[in-house]
Image (cartoon, rainbow, N blue to C red; front, side, top):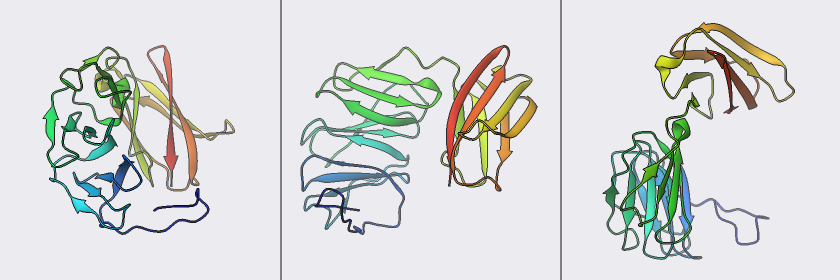
Length: 217
């Protein structure tokens, strides 16, 4: 969708039937959209027409361009793509990471960050020529799919560390909606009768308490 009056009115822009996770414009005319089927589209006329770039076999979670030519895409397999020519060609950057990367951001053409599942935080100081991750080994709750419709799976970044745990789902008023005891590995919970909204998950495991949120639609 596109607005030219600060959000008072929106027009639908037709691209394809694919679900697009990210969109990024480098100016008022040139923009990119990334899809979960590995599609990257480019427009040079403010979204009227879109041209597909080289397709990839992994989903695109996020796009960021620190300038008109250099751009990055974070993928659902933990990899990062880079273009130096405004999206005409893309190359894979090794990250040493296999966790899905949900967001990527650069402060300049050299310094950037990518964040993803299980507490992954990657940093590069060389325009993607190398990445470091100091935080990805901490225990984190993973909830998927998120947003969800009927069922969710809840696990730690290391499922083997989940022993005899308790999983509790609260609404934003603190009411307990679901409580599941003696969880090992992965907690699969179906919530078809819960209304749409934001919910809190609390996981008690081996003396520690972790919390996270998910959205039901």
